[in-house]
Length: 483
Ligand code: ADP
Ligand code: GLC
Image 1 (tube, rainbow, N blue to C red):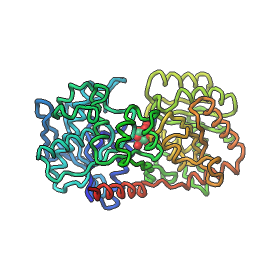
Image 2: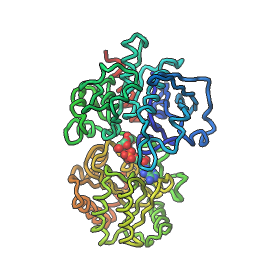
Image 3: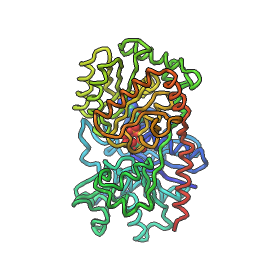
Image 4: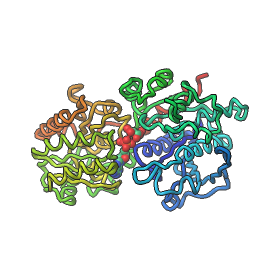
């Protein structure tokens, strides 16, 4: 099988969130399973400098963008077995300070930037010596691909077109633009209607993908159900319901070659389910390095996230104000919206020596915090999949989660199955419910044997990407066999 993946982010080259981890692992593990894989993604600033294996090629993609022709040179990198990454170079569109914008402002030409990417994917799919059977698109940035392909096919310009699959990682981001920007797509206005690209008078890229892709999926089974409802459908529940027979949920996995508790370059001590002393040492090291009281008896809670509404940061801070009246510590690593940064910095000022806030983005610290903490707080308003609860479990750090989306699918609460419990879940999205979760954690911490059992079970849970890649392969086969 031959698959071309289109994405605006891929780790470690470009990342704003879990999308990058997901596409990197998907490519790698599909390749390992024997699939011929190509990934098409922009060559953003800094990428060439970080990997000498990326080299320029003679491939120059010329595409019509509005009334002009834009060119992108393809750089290539053989990333792993059967996996080639095709980086699209366009000085003006991609060599900038950010991926989607700078200083909290989206770039005003994002429609053009990502239509260009979608058109280059289309051109590559036609020109590659190995013709992809299927093109797998991720999120709104490349969701116009299926309609661009359909238009080419109908005009007789694309014989034997590939099948298309769109993965929705986060329905809240749709790529909504003024309708006059449709001119950059070079599509006829006949596509601009209620059952096409139109959305309350605007042009909606994600809706285009939902309507025109052959098949759809989301990154957890629960989220696939949730988005069909008014509460979680972000206005697209109607379009999604039309296609619900072609929509499934596949939970993301963890790349355990990176997220590991032994021989991890970011950790000083190794640990395993049978030998947890290294975890205690990591906790001690973190407490010391962050200026928290060094004491194994004080439960340490952590959180690593983008500071945005989705992640329930304000609610968490409110609950922590109560929780911290008891013996506990909290450490957070994150960056994002300025008002939420202020909320957490304020919390640290109220509890000196007990709360540490690290504003920024740092992979090394994210591993250290996951390893050192006893509990991981993830009170997301909604969560398509969520990766940190999965990383937490592998690191023996008990997740405390709002029971939605992928959080609901991946964590088992004692009330569901006492013998298999791996974490703590709460149902309501309120600070009282988060606090209740914290109290349950404090109680668990007080019972060393029970805590040990939780940790061992959580660490043993297997969310390996090889199994997830198999699920995608099964879905691809089903798509290719369908008429
Ligand atoms: P989302 O994609 O919605 O942000 P996920 O849980 O899927 O949420 O993925 C978030 C990813 O980004 C994880 O790999 C997490 O460790 C990482 N991450 C988020 N914030 C930071 C940060 N400040 N420093 C390092 N890694 C971070
Ligand atoms: C999105 C979602 C997150 C998911 C990630 C990778 O960023 O918000 O829940 O884990 O995509 O699929």
